[in-house]
Image (cartoon, rainbow, N blue to C red):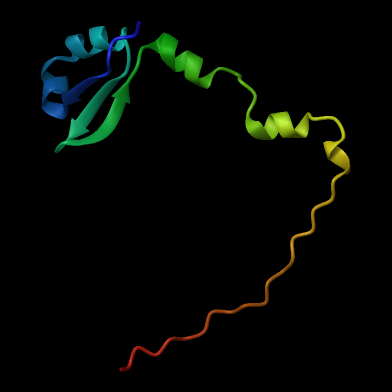
Length: 88
């Protein structure tokens, strides 16, 4: 069972990079700036799983038999932006 994600402040991360790297072996480490998530540290193995050559949705749709014959017409809209008067 995976361990829960670890959260570290930027200061904790800067003072304990070794701790952060060890924690990343068990799951993502969320690094915060001023209490807001700003970065995520993951192990290299986990990163490779995320970016491996998995087919994208577009790849799957393009490789579906019979899809190549579908024609799609997108209408051109003639709407133009008009100035707005903000006078009360």
